[in-house]
Length: 361
Length: 103
Image 1 (cartoon, helix red, strand yellow):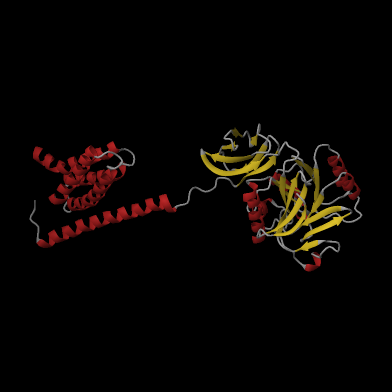
Image 2 (cartoon, chains in turn orange, brown):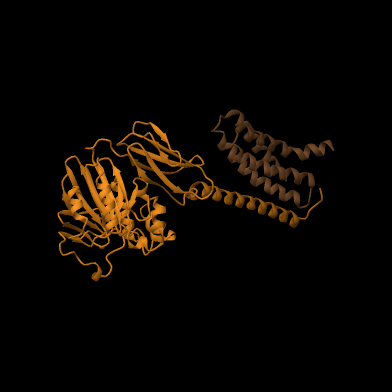
């Protein structure tokens, strides 16, 4: 070994020390990265760009829908309280038990990415059914989100909307902001049966909203049967075509309690009223007016649920109906409970307070 | 830098003995600690062997650096692999002297 001067030896030790310091720094960086990856980094992002959400419920079947970019395969499993499981085919569960709340999970690539529950329609005609109604909501406001949270906490069997699902128009680009994000939690649990308002129909005659929510048609005119309950959704108003549709739907035998839902409230003297009386419709539910109102029109209780998100707007367009028994500007939703002894209605505001109660059961 | 090289060998030997005497997963901690210290010392050893350049020494120091890193993390995958890395560390620390003795 060559003879070194003291200076060379000191320099060599300095280089050795520097190298060891660098090694320590490398270890520190690696440790920080590992800690960040294991404990600070969030898990992989949600692979779904929309959903999964419940779109149909029957006595023995349930249908879910979703949007998943790419070719990922979604495996859906529903589990009953007794532990029995069912696997969905193309998003549809069959062979389920009536009147049972199933927990479902959606796995992508063997990782569970979404979960929720649904309650199959009861076969027993006296079984209680609860559904919620919202209207004039699709605006993505804080109030809509708040109403969405209270809805989710109530766990209704299904949700009905009285139209104006997306402001200002029902364009595809707005639907996540206006519908699927604020109502995400409740849509994990309950199907959203929507009818159409003017704002939905402005764009493509409602096709965008109908496609996104997997509705039977663009006009929002169809029938929902759930256990003893029938909900006839008419669309924008009670014109001749809607009355003819309602006549056919309400003539169907079976349901014990029937409701009619449309966007524009039924007014005294409307041609649909004799039909509603004759078929013993429990109530008419509407939106359009950005208030919550309870009225009796032509002998039929009518609930206007127009404050689920968008807000009252100009006072000139949000006048109290002269015959309203209750008229509120509070944001909220209507909870309808059907039991063997009757039907009860509660208007629940965005903070969960019951501001109006009507009926029995 | 005999002192550094001997220390690396001792750490490798300690890891190897620990691997023989202590069952998994308790053995992972001593293997991890020995591996980290050996990694730092091997970095210093490599620097010393590069100034001035001593190819055989530098090569074994470089390999010891990689081996120490392997010893640190290999226990997560396989205890046998980590114990093997500890044994390799002993051999690498002794390798330059053995090569010189044979040459």
